[in-house]
Length: 114
Length: 110
Image (tube, rainbow over all chains, first blue to last red; front, side):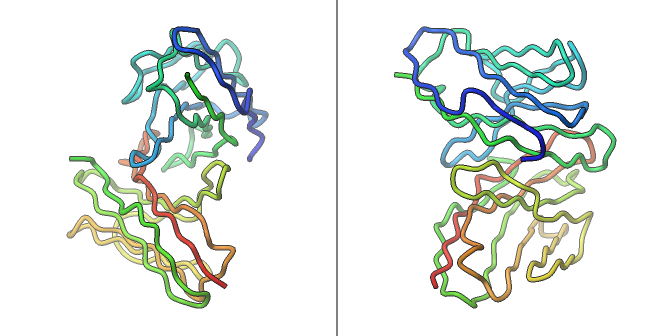
């Protein structure tokens, strides 16, 4: 998975609790992304980062925040988890030089919100 | 209407069959068209990409783009059980934002 790890790989949590997912890369790529994957919807972009401390919203950003304090780490926080956020979350990276940007994906985190 | 439409399947074929996977799109600004393969409980991996219209071949895989019809296809020749996976089409206008289809689940029976 191109030097990308995600933690935790599985998590069960309760509605209303905060949850943080971590993405770590060893490729020194500039761009990092968080997607969620749900049946019938495919991959939808939550947030992305184009550099340390530089982040922006994707199409489904409500209820999520991100932070990137180091090139290698991109954190996704569910501020107050809801059942609608039960999903598989994928982190992806890309170099920031290519056209198009080839994205490399991590192994995913399965999140269940009860 | 979604920007990218893809039939979720599942599509089940016998080993050795030719498989055709398709996507339609609505945004005429898309210039780069990609196919990702995703095995069960894994992240997607880039299979191949094409720029603009035309065909691109890589081994048993051929990607085809028809911009006039806003239609892209992935053909798999001599399909193998190891090709069983979900195939996602993806499109890009030339920047770093990529729009993915919902994915088609393919089963190749031995």
